[in-house]
Amino acid sequence: MKFLDEAKVYIRSGDGGAGAVSFRREKFIEFGGPDGGDGGRGGDVWVEAVNGLNTLIDFRFQQHFKGKTGVHGMGRNRTGANGEDVTLKVPVGTQIFEEDGETLICDLTKEGQRFRLAKGGNGGFGNAHFKSSTNQAPNWANPGLEGEEKTIWLRLKLIADAGLVGLPNAGKSTFLAAVTRARPKIANYPFTTLHPNLGVATIDGREFVLADIPGLIEGAHEGIGIGDRFLGHVERTRVLLHLVSSQEEKVGKAYKTVKHELEAYGGNLIGKPEIVALSQIDVLDEKELKKKAKELEKACGQKVYLLSAATGAGMTEALRALRDVIVEAGRDEDLALPDRQNPGAAREEGDERED
Image (cartoon, rainbow, N blue to C red):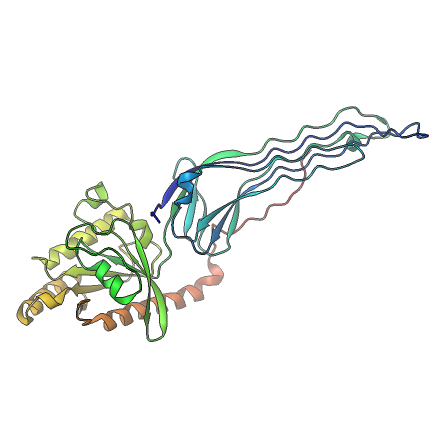
């Protein structure tokens, strides 16, 4: 399945059904009076986050979604049926924007979350509704109200606990394949990874989700290379694992290059907890390894983990460090939960009929 994380979609809710103009006509009933029923309401357009999806590829083949029109009212005070709703099923982590691409409508971060994007038009009143003491036989009815229409943008930001960042060929995909069942493409050339990959890592009986994105190079925020278009997929992570290849001639410079791109991108990535690791250490002798580890520690100002996915060295320690940060971040979120407000919470609007 191809990966697609952005799609443009046109939506339109259904029109309301028209009210009926009808009069009761039965034998032996001289003044039957009006009995035109109301029109049914048009179908709404909803968006729902569902499990089992991790791409917006379905919206490449269908970009128009329209709610059904309400059924018109009929005689004998029969109200028309409401039009069927339309639901856009999207992966968890999808954001919905207005046509300008900047105004956020909702952010679906939990499975089962729903949001009404367009409300169906109200059905029109039949002539029975307008009967009064001074007007016993009204001969008019209301047409149904038109539905809403708009163009929206869907943008997917994957939900993961930890994200892997680094230059191309830093060993991110190899790390992901070693600690999870994910099978990303691995090769000895830059930009082997062309789209994000997810995997579930397990350490000491606890599971967490890892996200691997294409490598960053200098000038990525300006569109050089694949650019920074996939950095949104690590915005929601609780911790970043920054991998620096030991094969880099200057590991300190390689670290600072990626940090500069994260800062230029924004999205609070520069402020996230970070674990730094020197990868592919199996290709260095002990003397060279100590030299590069010391250089990297000086550049990042913290402890550096030494990893080798080929031999398994240091992998357990790095996973435990990631787990500890994730667990601590989860505790902080639980403590702050009563004060948090989710802009993407499902909005249930009343079905009040408008005159």
